Amino acid sequence: MFDVNNVNQLPERLCRTLCSIDEMAVGYVQRRRRWSFWRQRLALVHGSGCSADSWRYQVDGLSRDFDVAAVDLPGHGDSKPVDDPSVERYAATVIGVLERIGRRKVVLAGHSMGGAVALQVALTHPELLKGLILIGTAAYLDRLALTPDIFLWAVATMPHKFKGMFFSGVVTEDALAIAGDDIRRCRAETVMDDFAVCRQFDFRGKLKALNLPTLILCGDEDHITPVHYSRRLQQEMPGSTLMLIQKAGHMLPLESPDRVNAAIREFIRRC
Image 1 (tube, rainbow, N blue to C red):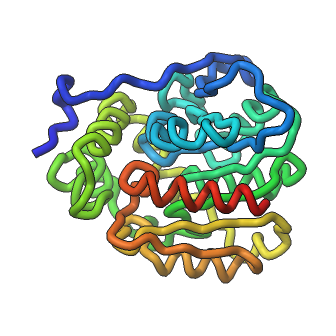
Image 2: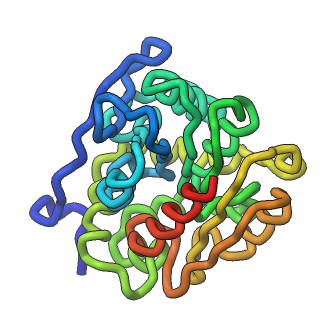
């Protein structure tokens, strides 16, 4: 069985660039120091307890076609924590990175909590974006509001619960190792803060005015944000496209990278 504490299984991390945003050190991954003028741009925002490393397969696979960057949210990866974690605060960090790496519009992709962060960016700064990709995301997590933190912590940290809750039964050991490394590196305080952040956001009734091409991806075996959350999100966002990925769980970018990358690639080329 995979052990999140076994350092011999841990993969090499992606190389970060550090910058200062609002006097806070923020890490992000960017394959090219200078983005090209003609290539489409893709920015990636990770979910709870994760980091930019959770997008390894997208950074590796999509940088051949697009200029790709992945952000470490405050308290995650190489970014310093903040005293007031919230979707709004996390979104401000993403906006700061987007403004630093270039003024041209990007397609912004967010996974799980990162999808909520992406929605916040879209609502407050739509001029920065060319499109949205929401993976395992919800407009509101009603079930999470009723779940005790101790159970959430157990799911996030205990190997036998971690695999069963976040992945389908066909996940690779490499994908588990990357996800486990993120959880192992993330401070307990940050994980608990993320639970609070996810309880607080509520975009119901606020998304109909968004006029951005939007792709919604969800695994049909997602136990964290089940398919009905994605269907509700699609109803909240007229004109959005929902794609269900078969035999996949919540950690789609790691578990089904080929299918996720193909869907992202096709979506960006249509934007």
